[in-house]
Image (cartoon, rainbow, N blue to C red):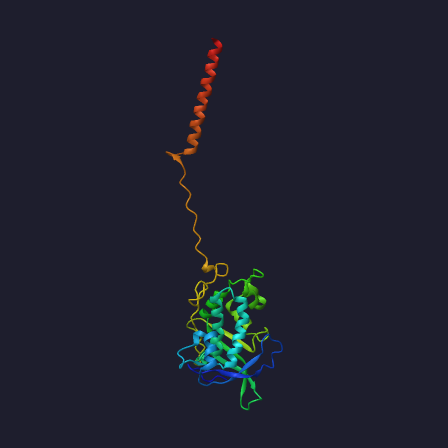
Length: 290
């Protein structure tokens, strides 16, 4: 369903109604339209919103191309905003998390790492197909680094890890980058409008058919994404904590020659006291005889 996997080409574009397979969702379950065509130039309101939601995708005003419509970007902004509430304590994590979906939905090179696997006819427009399921190919490094930047973020209300609410049955302890993404791509999680199957591939592993797994830059949690933001706090990012100064080495043992110095002093004091005691006894005896 995605015969062209090329730079500058989309896998889908625009909105083709709601997903009939999703009954309950916190956000409208709008699905994209199949469109394996060149990316469109972003301008006007779309470009302005893109600067706010996905600034990394903005080039010059006349050369910014995207694979998302204004409506899709609005939905993306709402979805990322809901997750951002949970991850709000760490700017780098929020930015990395948003970028996962900015590339997913709006990247002009979307078809390079996206493969649509299931569609249905969109009755409102004859000949148009609505996407119900697709595969996303990411480099393992990209997914792991993004996950690492978020895994230490805590929820102030509970003191627990925010990642526990975003990993389904695995919780914080068993959560991995793959489990994290799998839960986010699950159409039954209350947020995903359709099924997304994430494929994480190590360097050197190629899926073939012209697919090139996405490997975008990632901010560490101890880095500030922009000049007006701060790195994550030590509480939410172990890398941001100051280094622990190791305790100084204990002083060398006190010795007199080869002997323990304290023992030598104790023996000397004992000997002196014994001599004083002996002298006192002899003096008393001498006085008594006199």
